[in-house]
Image (cartoon, rainbow, N blue to C red):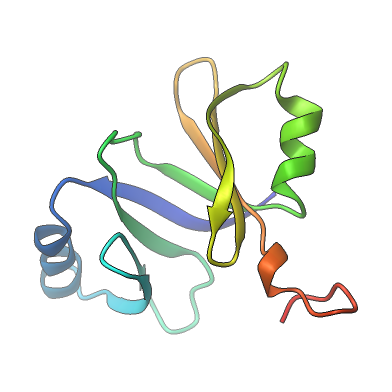
Length: 121
C-alpha cells in the first residue's frame, strides 16, 4: 500500500475549500465534479489532501493505492471489516475497511488508467 491522499470528509464543500485555499494556502490539484477535490500542500508533495462531500461522514483517514481492489477484497473480506465494498471511480476501483477502533483505510486502484501492456499511464 502506498499513501496517496489524506481524506477529509466535509458537509460543506464550499466552506471547506475556502478554508483550505484561503486560510491554509493549498492549491487545487484536481477535482471530480462537485463531490471530490484534491489539494496539494506544495508543488513537489506526493501526498495530497482529498476533500469529499461525504453524507455518511466516514472519519478522516488515509487513501492508499494498491494494485487491485477487487483481489484485495476477495482475499480479505472475511478477516477485515469492510464498510464500503468495491465500487467504480474514474481511475479504477475503491473500497473502505476499518481497523478494530473504527479508523478507516480507503483503498483505490488505477485499473482504468492502465494501457494495453498493463502499465499505468
